[in-house]
Image (cartoon, rainbow, N blue to C red; front, side, top):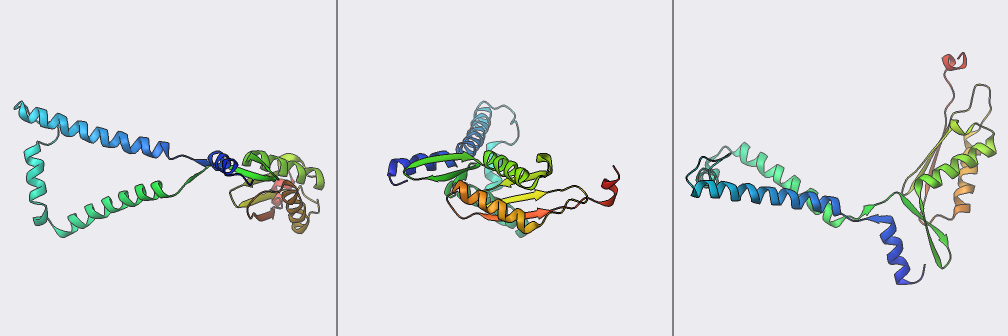
Length: 193
């Protein structure tokens, strides 16, 4: 992936825009402004306020320094947390559940579910364990393999890890991948079923 255009395309395919967060923020801001506008119009028309009259709200803001300190601190903490959430959403990129495979000068973007399914099928084929007893989850930097062999079926965790790591190496995923393997033995009650 040497060209800048190709890098931009890969980034666009693997990262999500913050459209939803921005949409929610804009809708909340518009709703607040519409509410303030309605209250102002009702006040100018000498009608009763829907929630709070603008003069009462302004009086509350002016009298805020005389309120109990706990109330001011609690309100400030809520506003600070909301502000931090919006800053975090603005700075951090969203991630889609996709990985990039090393294909030389081409970009191959694959959904994590496809990689998980291929790994589960590979482990099932190589170990002889039924496919429905192999569960694989693929994240941005990790692969989690859980195998549930039946009673009396010998299966070594190191063998499953070796099979999984070999398959991941063959897929040539870009970026470090941590593999976690678990072999879960059935409970004695399940053997009787």
